[in-house]
Image (cartoon, rainbow, N blue to C red; front, side):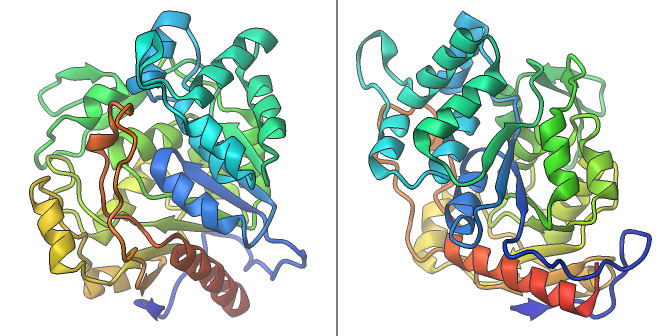
Length: 356
């Protein structure tokens, strides 16, 4: 791992002393593939994991269930549950998608979570039951239990609503205003997980449609500002065409803190490995580019900027033709073990150096 900064400040108050726990408590904020990747590897380091999941998803199977049954979005919750489970057969069951008939495109886990919500009368209780069935390490918590829709406004005052629709928009050079409708109440258990963690990780993912909906929930940013945890962001590997085309590592981090309304980051972890020509050729047709970094800009930031080789050596292939939105997902992926190891080492370094 290569450190890009030497002198860093704390978020305020006295320097925090090393934790004397046998297991590190880690909270991961995000949703979808980015959280799945991190949680799958972090569970090998600790059982004290809390996956805090955005609840604005309205595409694919999740969107249908929201529209037809008034359910809270189960898709990203399902992915996090699966990531934290050690039961391979049950994981496969929850990820299974029907390929024909009226259920075509639906993941079994999405239907199961929706049924549990209807049976218990409470989505949070349904997630608890599913956690028991999957025998997960840690907990999965919706960031809010309010049924919300993501909304945005551009510089011309035009408004757009819906996470799926916003994810396909082109912003140009704009950094749009985002909010949730109606204004949600944060899940107290999610806030408590942030406040009591040793490490809080902001997972990689689509910046405006996956990460932002978790961070803009009222109360989340404030919790990030006051927690004694080591707060770290794992930067995306590639840009998203039409939204983050020219973004470098510091631009992603700036947006993360803008969403939260707080300067809360203690560290940013980013990839320094250039993808192979084969990988670049694969992504050129999608307009994706490797996220670059400027050492001078990063050195001036009040957080530790740590670069490492985090790129998976294989190209992700979608083998589930019943997933209607899989084709829109990036094929380039983090090496989950490399990222998890880098997170732990960076935390231990900062803890021992008393830099947060």
